[in-house]
Length: 347
Ligand code: PHE
Image (cartoon, rainbow, N blue to C red; front, side, top):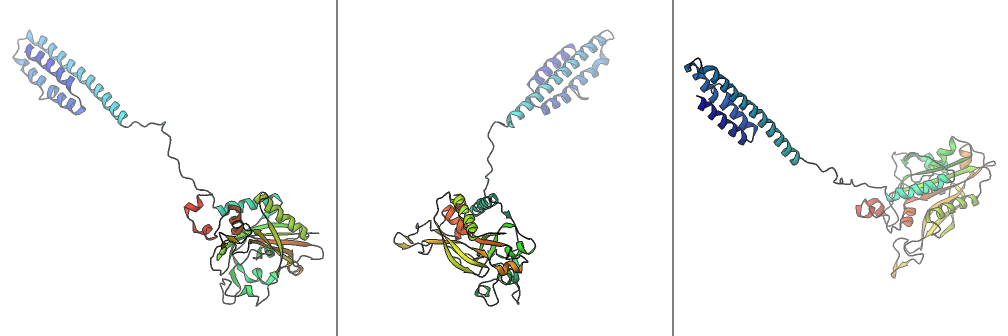
């Protein structure tokens, strides 16, 4: 029996040493120490021993069991550590690898130019205001001195909502002049950018939806010189002196006198020709109209409750797309609305 026990100890310890997984260990534990295990089977034969031998064998059996149990625990710990280490190695994350950069977009080129123009006018003391695109005909036309039957009121030019032509998509930002003046006494100094709509075919310089920036200054002793000063300051700051403009007499029903301002075409540099062809950006004109302006008509002031004997004012309406085209050297207005990433990425 002594030999049997020693064999069990030896074989058990070497089997445990070569077991390499928690499952293999558990299998060994059952085979060695379980109710039907090898050790138990030997101990069942204790009854056959003499009373002198019994305690000696009992002690030996206990030490064999203790040795196996100890080895079992030790191997359990070893294997657990090995499994953990393998797992850590397999799942290792290198926190020093640089992250993947998120692709950030940027402002639309037209909004970049709008922001520049706003900044320039804010620097001159203007307050930026916002107003409705769905407008009353009375604000868009009537109170701006544009009487019934005027060609610009024609259904072929204007998007109307109602059969009586009283509600429309504003065709200009000038109704913001009325909205600014009807509730406020001078001094008034506002800038009102926004979308406007006309039934235009799209070409290199036209689109049925475009943007204007309305400006209005009303106070005592405001003159045409102040108007030219404000516009020239804006152009100089925006183009850093790199622009040629001209003021040309014009007519608007709501300003008197009135003018239009042109910029020399950035594509053909005023010649009207590119490579022997008519310049497509300015249609051969050599100039691009960028804004309309003038001194606010006395009737318009009076209609808003402002005394034209005491106050005078100027107003202007800038075409934002045309400004953006010359500021960023874009040759075709449609590019601004196409949303082609290859175009947008250039700015
Ligand atoms: N609203 C005019 C247009 O759309 C421009 C303008 C604005 C003219 C202000 C005079 C004063 O053409």
